[in-house]
Length: 240
Image (cartoon, rainbow, N blue to C red):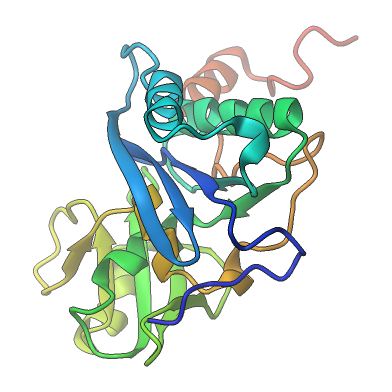
């Protein structure tokens, strides 16, 4: 495997802290030079106490790594769970700001596609996840002969029926289950440690701390219900 090498000038010998929380199964990891030094699974979801921050603190302490000694923070950018993504992004921004280190974003669907590396042939795939309301988020990717994943198209929202053409070609990678769909698909899961299988071009450009937000994909369900009940958008509520 060719290790991803960032091109922004960070010290290749310093580790990156990676956070991924787009699904109910979050994780944190410490990676350096294309290798994962440590990783921790974290249960995410509405009603759960935040375990992502404690997992980061315990992992760094166990390995004796100071925040200022990191090359940077890499955060899974979604799409996925609105609340969990917000938690991960807030932690990532806080560490980046406090440590004076760069923040990077990587597609959570690309991380999920990396779960299939080594078990499927190289070539084009469509990795997709639940977008609610009968739709799926879909990201075209390419799994290369170098055992790295690359984005090869824009994020889309498709109906389950629209996935059939990809399923016939045997190129679907599904995050979680795909209800009422009878075609064979491979199930994959995003994880922080899988950054080592993602080409650097997908994540090695720093984002602005004061402007970056995860790619939620669509409004939170709570906001949609509120706007429907009140007949206005939340951004304009209370305005004259």
